[in-house]
Image 1 (tube, helix red, strand yellow):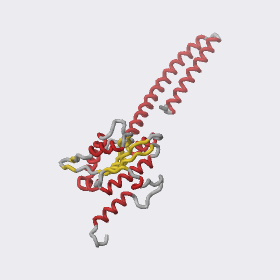
Image 2: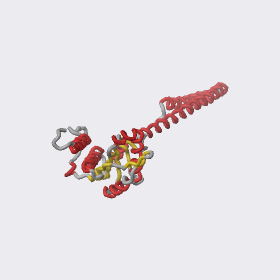
Image 3: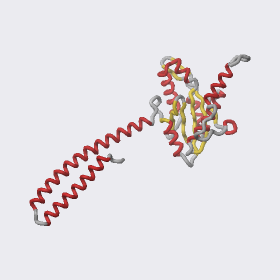
Image 4: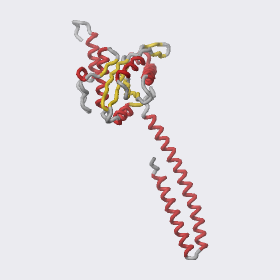
Length: 261
């Protein structure tokens, strides 16, 4: 932990003052001037006591401020609705996993807009919190569950993809109760095995598998490069985003045959 500049300065002043007073006292004693040496020594002790008191006060204030900043930072890394870690924590976990393979599950809540419309955003938040709780119970203690934002969640683990899929399938089976209303838990999940160190690649592959699950209505899909393709390079924005494509396809399937859209 770095001391605040004022605290570090006070420490230096205390050290320099003590050394200076000590040098003067020694010089006076060596030159036979005991009385002035005694006076300066007493003044030096008093000055040192004052400086130490000021230093201690500022050190305590700096420690309290550091604790406040650390608490604020911890809060910034947690999603206020679900209590899960936020996206940057998941990305850091993936970057730190360089040299190893990780299993990723990207979970997207289906029909979240309708839930918010029917049960208000407060009800939607309770639904998301329930999803987060189910996901947390489906993983091991060493695994990471994070909310990417909106209605998307991610799990980062070293477990086998098939084992994770079975755990998630069991976790999202039971319905969710919001007040007196019981709603089915509807999610689409994409799972992939990817090399650590590249969050964009890992999240991109899981994202493509997830949208395959959403398009098929199959619940869970494992990433298949032949079927899902590779994600675009970082910084390249697709002409049509997955969610926009999914909405467009759903609109197309609901049109009356023979009638223009």
